[in-house]
Length: 602
Image 1 (cartoon, rainbow, N blue to C red):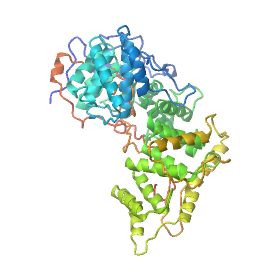
Image 2 (cartoon, rainbow, N blue to C red):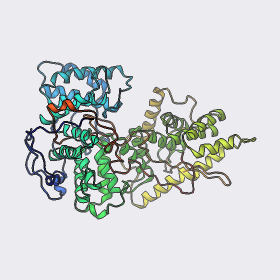
Image 3 (cartoon, one colour):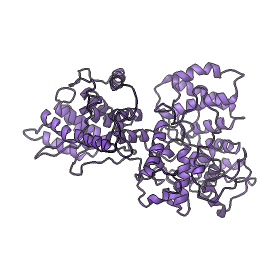
Image 4 (cartoon, helix red, strand yellow):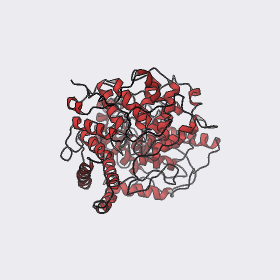
């Protein structure tokens, strides 16, 4: 297999002794648009003053003004199909500046990235929205025409070509994508350096990978800051481990997180919370980069909420969990928990919503078994094993309807096939000569002793800290729940039988917990946490353009190959870290406190 093209002679090689300059992050002067050499960087560890958001080389979207977590909205505005369709007539005019046309194309690619992976070789998108496909076709034609003079147009074309997302519109061609990324980076669109670095790293050419990522760091490219921060933190890319430099770079990447690259803020928040799986990082390591009089937990709150604001599903799930169980420094707040779970949209969040509605929350909303069923079924249909078990349990007990042992056994069989030991236990119980069926009264006892108790405990902890409830001024909970029901009815999945309990909000808060029966296996309804491997894996930032859904990116670096590009072959997928976990940020999983005596997660 031929290696990726090497930098042409016009680009001076970088000696190993210069590598350290890339990773400290402090550029001493404004970089030129097209560098002829690697900019000189400060050798000092960055301090809080450099942790300010850098400027963007991208024009603002014509559809919306830039938003930030400091706005009053819970999440940033994102483009929609209808808005893009409405704005097209204004964009498709001969006197419109190319920058505005590219901003429109960028929004289309962002929207495509929310519906399908744009990672290299991800394959054809399974789009059912004909309007979105038409927009993609229009955008592809537009940035293809602009590619000769606009480096970001080359980048957008390369992103789609590398992914193979819409092969009928943009041919899947990794070789041509590499050439476009290279040309885009050299012409001044610095984000493309990350894509080049990733290609070299995947192929195993760590020297050129460091070169590309390093150039990206010099220009403040968030994905490159993030990648080099992880590399320093863990001693990757043939670099010695340097925890202070790694944390400084990660802090800078987190601060620079945007709608297009929210993941660094989430990763850094997990580090601050001590939930990254990297136990060898001492808490004192954060002292040099934290703002004065700021604790790691308070700083984590800022960055986690920033990632959630920018629509990063694992961060939104984490906030839902934090408000549900009053994880410090978040207070207990059932409605905030529900709203963040709704925003997340992951199957784990859907299962968490099912458990909220299974019991309700005193002072916020009553239980609604119809919604409990809807969200569990959604998660089960996506393959979440605990949700498959929950559907079996709901059918066995008669949640949101009559008992149906045939359906219960069918769901338990699915869960058992996917490794659920608890489902196997229920199957054995139901296949006895005299089936041992869970009763409704046992179900009420189980939910009261576990789900409700855990949330009651969370409220007590929150109250003891002096947190007020509710924590924010927001829409009335009744209206929120009515909107949720309307959405599920529109989707055609809300059970048409009325819920067992009406849904007006009562007055004082309790919470949810899980169950326990004397002489019988106990069933914990404790949330298993966000299983990134199963639905939205947090990946290393990859070449998707503005707007990838779960792991977005920014890029920069320099390693080139003009004519030599002809010899490029797609790199081996097995080389280099391909996922967030492989890069060493050990988990996008949120470990949820659970009763160790319980054997079942539902």
